[in-house]
Length: 385
View 1 (cartoon, helix red, strand yellow):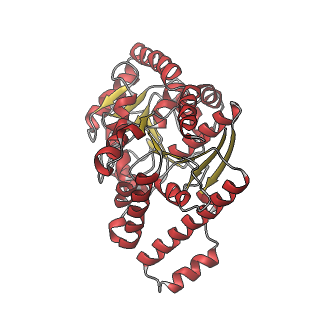
View 2 (cartoon, helix red, strand yellow; view 1 turned 90 degrees about the horizontal axis):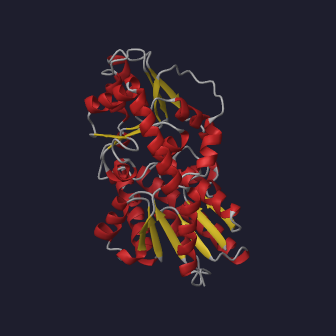
View 3 (cartoon, helix red, strand yellow; view 1 turned 90 degrees about the vertical axis):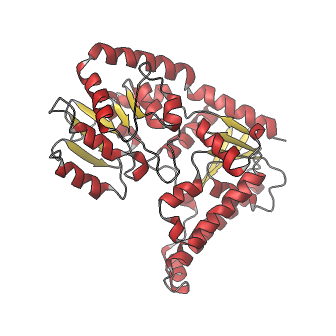
């Protein structure tokens, strides 16, 4: 099949959506399908165009952000229009409502089916980032959601929570939704995890591969470290975001500066070796602005890399991990509960080994990227001409 994959996000970038798309493309190509990708980095306006837009909007941030994003979507529409004419895809697979909106503007779509994977609620995510202060930008997001949820032929939700949002908040027909958890190429993860990296982290340590925003709950991992019995244990935080200064201040206030290592954004090939050597990978997410963590690639990659995922018992995380069997689930926003889980992994080697064994079996059987890709291709074929 010919598959055109589209997202307004940049690919690659440091984050789960990028990994998801990269894995899908690799599996499709490895299994004989032709794939093209249109991603947000291809649609950015040159600096002079942004400067002109800023001038024409008289510095009004609301208008500038809205018009700048409209320009990105328009450029994606142009790129997709060209691919439809020359590549002639059997199906277009989008990975956000913005890409779906742009694709649906193509005048030469001519019945080419559009399938969308839903990684998270766009409006809720944007509101968490302050979209309520930018009404024109917020309305553009609503317009993108409205058109996408009305006209996209089929949706793949990365967990049951995303499927529920589609059905309950947006009225999407349940027969148009499939739930498929994020998966990993287990062999690739293990190969990368064996590499040697030189990063300023000492054993024993826990890894927190999270963007530094409210919903990822990184503060609770720092607070938990202060309660862990082993005073030599470190916390490695791989990610960047607007809360970094606040989190650095928190570590300092808890006298944890020497034990909390902020690595900044770390590319995947350097991050996975850190997964493998960590006592556990922590995903301490919390509900924020209506956003609840979906299935996390950090969890499945931890399983594949041979360590224990420790995550908040919410959303897709609670679907991925079977508590005390394939990982540990903790109460969200509860540093003491998280510290107890960390102590277990630090001081009970037998229990840790058992969790790793079960997680390995789970990821190989249920979260294999080949099985996942085959299910997606089955949906493609259902709608392709």
